[in-house]
View 1 (cartoon, rainbow, N blue to C red):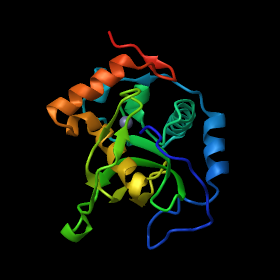
View 2 (view 1 turned 180 degrees about the vertical axis):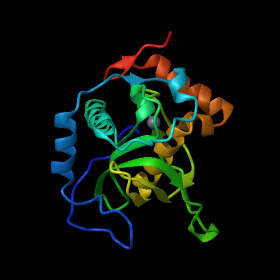
View 3 (view 1 turned 60 degrees about the horizontal axis):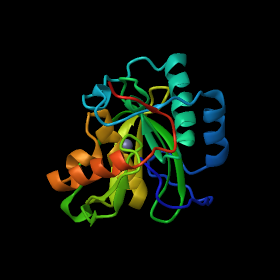
Length: 213
Ligand code: ZN
């Protein structure tokens, strides 16, 4: 997902069976991206973005190398979240480096993500602007719940749960959507989608993209 606001760090840690993704963010993110190689970003129209990705079944060195490349690519594109199909890889894995409602930075990886259903009282919609590295230079307002829980696996295959508020909740939903073949513009009205594609056509991405045929 494209970035929106500045980030800062605190020492706050989250628990209750949820993964702690707020500790040592700077060091962890740097270690990933320094091992990795930045790759160009696929854009709307590329078939890899418009179908469900394959489940991750091998939690091996190849997956670890992919995750490193994803962090490197995310940093180059100045994104706050990146799904594997955004660098052309048909696998259910996303990475994130995103601030939450309190401005706390979260850095992590989720394989095979599934969004948890929210109770009706938890479904408070937030209609902030959303952007996507695969729809470069476009933004649109999109209502989504301001809280999200994703279940999945870490890079070693251990089960994990990740929860987010605010912009990070939006990120978790946006990245999970990617891995099922949906872009945020697929959730817009026909007119809003057309407008987003027009913004993209008129803009110039600030990072390398894969040209569509
Ligand atoms: Zn996106």
